[in-house]
Image (cartoon, rainbow, N blue to C red; front, side):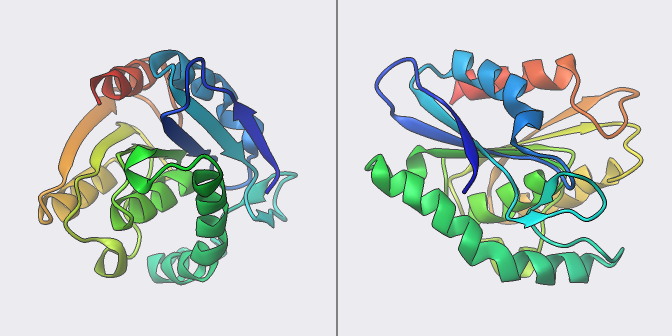
Length: 204
């Protein structure tokens, strides 16, 4: 996997995997990754390019979104889960760490996969920027994973109503969910959401 690694400042006790949005690349979340590294000095940050090239841009994608049908997204995501998990597990095993030492984070498409895989594998925490839970019937179960849902109130790509949908689905499985809504923000990450994410990390 083509990735960028931000080394931990102390002995590595946690791994943070950050997944970019559709059509983007590993550099897109680097600044946020550096802020996360400051918040958790014992965390090593991994930012990778998506597993498929994106025809609509020079970037990459984690799974196809050629349809507006959520079921099609879920099917495409499920098909690529083994390759995504091979990547996560290869890093985890090389560091001799477990799933409870992992934090998953992502934006948009990257947030979707972080939520589904993070909860299914009971990772330490998930920070989901502008996403929603995919295939809850397949990936949701009781989990100790702590979740932050961060979203713009004026998101024109994934409506802010996705937060209520995801929060409700997660709470049915007794998952600890926090929410941060940035007033007036479209499909993006601003300083308010970044500050809330950093505070969330420091509270773990």
